[in-house]
Length: 283
Length: 283
View 1 (cartoon, rainbow over the protein chains, first blue to last red):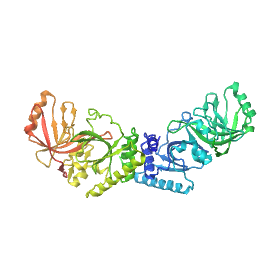
View 2 (cartoon, rainbow over the protein chains, first blue to last red; view 1 turned 120 degrees about the vertical axis):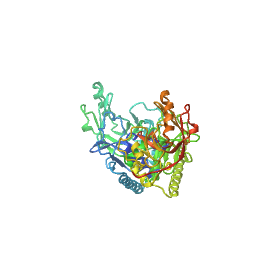
View 3 (tube, helix red, strand yellow; view 1 turned 135 degrees about the vertical axis):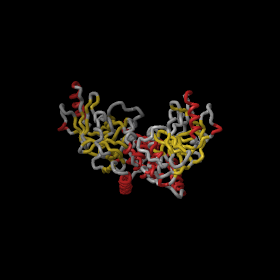
View 4 (cartoon, rainbow over the protein chains, first blue to last red; view 1 turned 60 degrees about the vertical axis):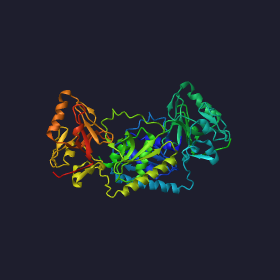
């Protein structure tokens, strides 16, 4: 996929919402900067709850919300449970009221564009959008780490696992996790963070806690016993999600550690985030 | 309808064609001039035949054609016979090849924008787009004339007829024509220029000739006799069309005169354009 392909697909996601569409295309074309990535219709989690923002600049952590003067349809979270929900705690939100006249709207958009430009300038190590590099494990290996701020999501579990010194071949991972060959007592985990088959995992709105529950009575307790016995109490988490464009992706969520006192046969395993940044390794 | 409404509707007409969409929104937002009107998917007739252009600036008579690298679907003219087909003879056509990379496309778009701005500057009496005035007969009465270059189309037959000294009330015209109270031997005519019920009227591609044929054998010849007898041999023509946004409109086509030597019981009445401009009158 090239940038034209990506951008035009993002535009067309808003196609049934004319005013949203006007705003999104106007911001992007007048911003006129191919080094800045954007996403339309980004699901976000915030301490106050989940939401959907209309335009998101991941490098700048700025969201645009378009106010059409009526309540948006309630989001059916059950339908969207597989969605790529990112943690937007501390992100900046800008609003555009499209019930105003076009001159006012254009004026608000100009201010937003100035703010986006200013924020880009203020980031000393701003990384230009590179649509191929962002999907390549090598990018993160060369950088030495993956941080939540990197907006990191891979196409495959293998790509994610190979950031940590592994050398898996394509299609080389068939389970929900991979070894971490460089750091002892740590796994790389690829959970579905929603009810799915025998599992009923979930993540808190602020994304600091993951609850891992096996719902099959015959294996629920033995799974917990097995995790406790293995002694691998840290997990680098890439959640399996559907990307905004509909592809499966593995979204980096940080490093989590087992909270043993909150783990039991009733509530399952509790994992708490201990770092937003993890080291990467050459194989 | 305000400009935001109009513009966002125009954008959404291209919604299933991502690249067309990218180009149209980019040209419009970067042109960034609310005094310039545009239409997407404009049907045009040219001496070489009919066509569909992707973006049209009526004040500047510039069309944009977006080349997606494959033949566009054949236009089903029978389906679109009611369309607002404008005469584009002598208009300027600019092309954008969207099979190129985004930088090249953006560059071509920049050149088009420069050309649009230059053409606007070159028009001494450029009239800024006024979305309300363009539908108001008063605008043309004050101006003193309607010219083909004015891109003139009204919402009702009454609006059109009242440009010529009439004082019809809303819903005051029920037939296909109206009197011209100021110029003797002239009618204002609102034909459907396509096969419709008992009529099979048509206009030539260069729009200089209109053929008026009644297909009901019992009235075909008596209609011709009646026109010849009345002695009203000039007609100001507003063709009944469907606007790009789906509304019925009455599109100014010019003033036509009966060509008696080409009028007969077999071919019907032949009208030939004698002027692209007509005078307007206060009531």
